Length: 123
Figure 1 (cartoon, rainbow, N blue to C red):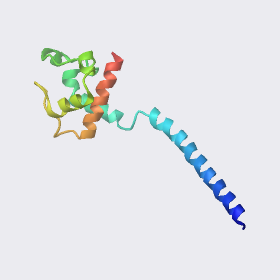
Figure 2 (figure 1 turned 135 degrees about the horizontal axis):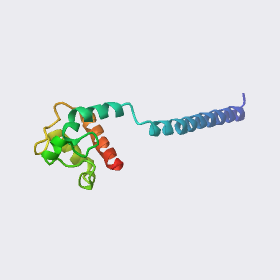
Figure 3 (figure 1 turned 180 degrees about the vertical axis):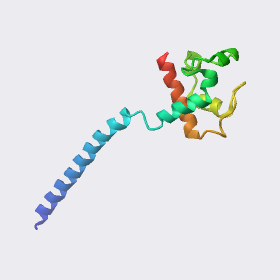
Figure 4 (figure 1 turned 135 degrees about the vertical axis):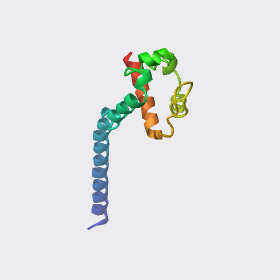
């Protein structure tokens, strides 16, 4: 093969690989963004078992929680707090709320913060 043919083959192969990479990227990104994630059911279950007793299924507060003056997780006051602050409250507890840092992983705590954010959008 001549040097010119080798150069054309390399350029052609590089172009094909680039198109394949771009095509796969454009195909995979929408799928990842559209899926709620495998943990959404697990996070909802965690919220039900750890949080809903006081905060209610919808975050608005159960009868028990309302008697203890727990905050409405859907309220602007809670929703405007930074994620880090919400994660710290879940981790360390606050007032009558117990700490969950020993029973939940960091990933579970951050998933709960996202769940709390989603409650604010449903109100």
